[in-house]
Each structure stands twice: as structure tokens, then as C-alpha cells.
Length: 268
Ligand SMILES: [Zn+2]
Image (cartoon, rainbow, N blue to C red; front, top):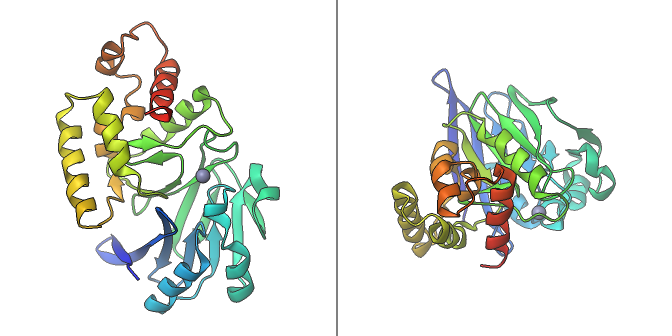
């Protein structure tokens, strides 16, 4: 089993370990472990077996599940893991009925604790109507589910382009050093599309090369720092003058430019 570990410190002391678990076709499951008191949360449950293997490899037990949205490749392991660990399951308020074994819902601006770590919830409708993101500001980490991908964004299944653009604007407002943990390894295909709409962007060309090299050796391209996404992700650049000019959409609203880019990706 491949498992990737990321360490985060606070005031020079180890504070959190994030375990990144490739599973299913191209999903990532994540565990976040509070070093101070040993509490562990799963961010979504794409594959209970893969998550259990990671827990046992680390010697951790599962205390809580934080769901980002109701899709089966994010909640499919909820019931099995709850039966096994007796863990609590927290999910978005707007999707309670669709989230298996949900104990508690949470919404915009609310904070949830994992030991000494704190996550603030950001509602990001668009991919699904109730999608939420968990932002751990102290360690500069955001679990963004299927809202933002490296060089991409989620498909609009339950929301308008306007709503998704507003959601992406909220994520874009986070600090540049925020590590973006998205739930799928889509970076290579996203880079191909990004280059087709933003071919002269030097930072994007470099990032696409890095992604190609990482994927050639089967390494993850996730997490990516938000500052780099702001420079290279076409969906976060829908309101930039050069993107609008290149698309001949100088008079359009950012949401219209975003809608055009999203439609282009759907048909790419
Ligand atoms: Zn989804």
C-alpha cells in the first residue's frame, strides 16, 4: 500500500500528521492526526479498507469522520468505519439525509476541534449544493473535497457557475501558503486543459512539467500550495485581465468567464 505522510508543526513543535491514501480509481483519502493527544480524523471515506490499512500502519485509531459532501466516493466507507470504530460522523448541514450514518452537521463559519487542532468550515456550493471545506488555519491546510482541484475545479452537478465562482473566490481568499488537499489526482488532465486556455503562462508551463514528471513516477501532485494555484489554475484566474482578453470576454462578468472555462473543460 502506498501512503504519503505530511508533517505540520506549530511553534516549532510537531502538531499534526496528514496521511494521504491513494484509493479507488483516482481518489485520495486523508487522515489527520493530532500529535498532542493522539486524536485522528478521516476526511471523507472513499475506501474503508484502505483507510483501515493506513490507520493500522500508523498505529492510530479513528475518532471522527469529517465529510465534505455526499457523493459515494467520499462517504462510501462511513458505515463500515463507524461500526468498527464507533467514530462520530460530521457532515454538511445541507446534505444530512444523503450522508450515511451522519451524527452531526456543521455549516459556514462554524469551528470543529480535533484535539488541539481547529477546523473552520467554509461552505462551497457548486459541485454539490451543500459541499463544505475544512480549513485548519493554524497549520495552513484546507481539505477542499471536490470543489477545487490542482489546476482545476469540480464539475457543476448541483449548482450554477455563479455559485461555484463565489465558492472559489472564498477559497482564493485564504493565505497563499495554505496547502490544498483535494480529493482526486486529476492534475495531469487538468494541466492539459489549463495549457490550452492559458498557453503563455510561465508558472503554469513549469507546474505542468513538474506534474508530468511526478505522474511519470506515480507520485502524487497533491497537496499544492494555494499561492501556486492562484497563479496557474485557470478557474481561479477567471477575473484576470489577461484571461478575459485571451478569451475575448473583456466585457463579461467573472462568473460568465468562469462558466465559459468550465464548459470548455466539460467538452475538452
Ligand atoms: Zn464529488
